[in-house]
Image 1: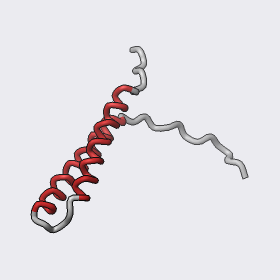
Image 2: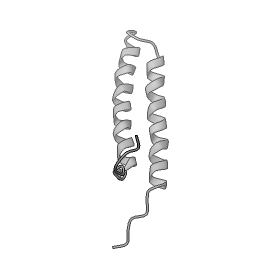
Image 3: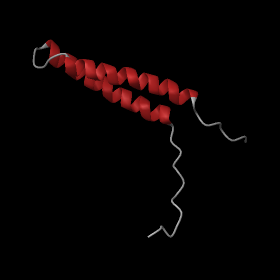
Image 4: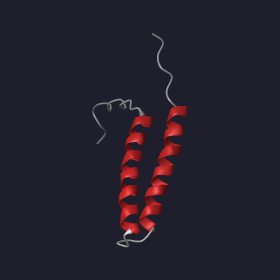
Length: 74
């Protein structure tokens, strides 16, 4: 049965801000896993995963800033 109404328009979101928040979370994870790895509680793989997430977040921020929608003329 086809829908009887149109879906709502997409919500405009500042992707750079969202990715920066994600980077903060990856940085917290990186610090926590680094402490755990230094104390011998865990290995270094979780540290590498968090560092990779942080690096990919940085690339995501660069992409989001470069591809921002043009602001409407006032």
